[in-house]
Length: 68
Image 1 (tube, rainbow, N blue to C red):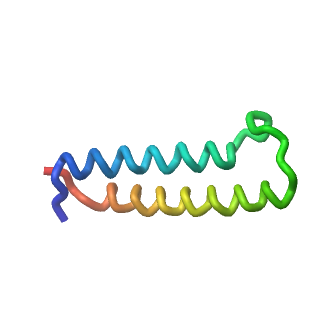
Image 2 (image 1 turned 90 degrees about the vertical axis):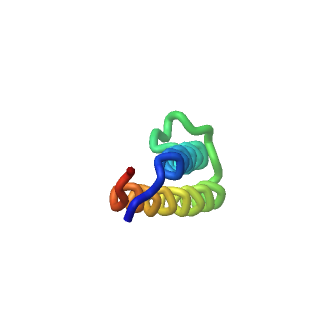
């Protein structure tokens, strides 16, 4: 599959944004996040997991296509 360069770059940017959003919602470093109640933390983790999954799918697409 051949992907135009501009589409590839936009997908790469989108991937980076998704990873950033996931990190903002649920930082990997617990010390960086403000204290949150347990139910709220669970919701944040679930939402962040969705963003990370979406980013992973985009990353898979980017590695499986060729740029012109």
